[in-house]
Length: 406
Image (cartoon, rainbow, N blue to C red; front, top):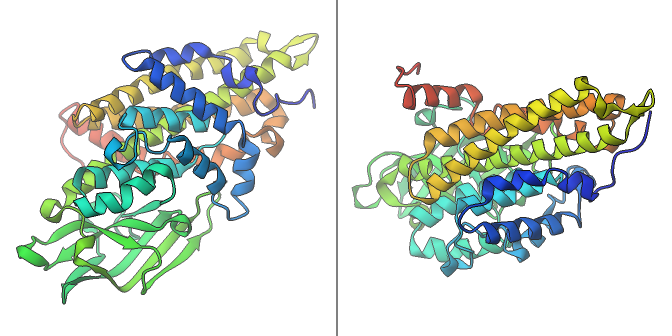
């Protein structure tokens, strides 16, 4: 069926389109470039075959995660006083994009060092920060994020899980759905409706730190058609008790949750941009060396144009992701830009992956070529962590001033 794809780590595959890095050439460009290269070097020790293998062996790709932690790549957005790099979300987005561009798109990076660490950094108590942030920075601790419920997907206000304050403790009862990597996490940030509490705490959704081995907490794995080291779980909480100090930031309620939403969307977009790079680069390398009728298939516009369109839209998605990350680092809301980045990046990734598979012909469906293995994951990102439709609702309401449909 023709010549084989470039070996993992081939310079043609990993650096064919160096001009892409131009979107990060601003203040701190040298530092970010060095970070990108260090992450790439770490990725080359593993590769996409490792990603696929760890998706079936229950290892959670922990060896790779630990190396990223030792490198300091996981803690770049965590303050230096807690063992991080203090560089901000833009730097973490660079890490996320680069691991995905090298065939290792771990969803965990959008959750543990992004959502959970940001919520704790901005709203956690001094004790919570001291206990968790250093471990999240070096990768020795992992956190999950539990918010979705069977009857409360996008409607966070409809959460039915309850946290009742009894005898100086929070007693949590309810169910969570599609919670990633619980089997690989030390604890999770869990959102529940608080009732009662010290100092006349107002009722409503609050965030709690819940150990994954807490008595009364059970889990069932969800069988999904996705190749990923992160498994998905349904959680059942039967009067799970956590101390009063497990509450994250008192009466701020949904404000704590919203702090984590933009980082999740931005990091998801960065991962998707990396997948697009990976797919396009593999397709370009294959099209240059695959000869049919005496010439490389890259000479045919039917091959070249879909890849050129994907590359063009990828440039836009990367700029949106970059701007949303920088806005967050400046302390701005940046919600519209983050939503736009997530929407565009998810659509571009699907477009780029499809073009890459088509370029490879039958080889595109072979696991050996490392493209079809990403199909389920890319499709997932159009549904999660927030669906494209809800992102478009947000954009139409906030950017265009159109009335809400919900």
